[in-house]
Image (cartoon, rainbow, N blue to C red; front, side):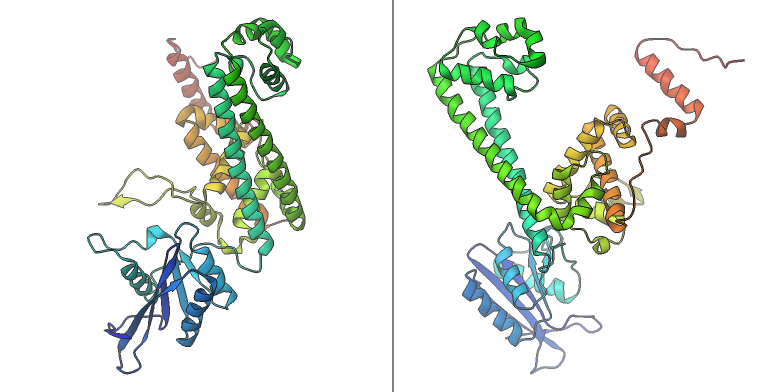
Length: 425
């Protein structure tokens, strides 16, 4: 074991291990007090395969040296095998964010150097662990896997629908310009008839149902194109893939409902929030759990989720700040919830619409997503609590009459009017 001088006055964790994770192997650096030379640190680096037997050998080595803390970088999904084996062997591994453990610029980079750097940072307590659901919450881990898989299935289904749109565009079939949902009952009936060989626009338009029948003349024009047998073959294959994804999503939804049974109260509580349905509630519970004690305040939850601006100040001046990076699955759920809230006559919906007009949809989605996360934290922290909607007119009541007058004047001036305000007698 290599002997390294320890700096006096430093508060160190005596026995630490840093793991640089790869797909085929892990590089481990262990730093412990040097038994032969007082005041010095011993360091040893070993490589292990990521096969289960080799990972258990790594754990045996850590146990032999009485390692107190094991840290590893969150590299893709390759961290999972060593992390779970360490958990099973009684260790409490730390998963750390890759952005927080970058080596100094200009220094060489190898797997060995990265492992040593991780161990040095860990022994000086310069790292903080990422949030990983504990092993005793197996149901939540399974729920998280399913909700994330559901998102991936929806993305794949949407990609297939976009391919269908491209085929129809190539055939000069403009159904999407007339029908709000080309994959609704009417759209699917028309596409099935096209695949079966029907080419008459009037007969195809006659398959429309509901409100779409009022647009028959436009639909006839949209269905006049150059649809041929090649388009029909491609369309049949793509629609089959869409149907397969629909069935898979339904199966995943059924499994999610089974896993949500123990958290029925939490789902009912979250369902009070505008924009949160059962799908969003399952995603939120799968990502953050139901125990909010791990987040001291709602601000901590928002910061962890990437819905808070990063601190960026220099020379006493704050620069333009962007939000951090969090779970993309939680961010997607909050984005969908914000879009859903915008369609409601609630305080959140009105706030979302106003922000979208003034700052754009992206800023509005982040702001509304943060507000929803704050509500989630409070409701899960106090399950007996109740979500109280302030109503769409609350912000209007809070504004001063003078401020409202200025806002209306600006709107009229933007429309090209000259406005003079005269106070009423």
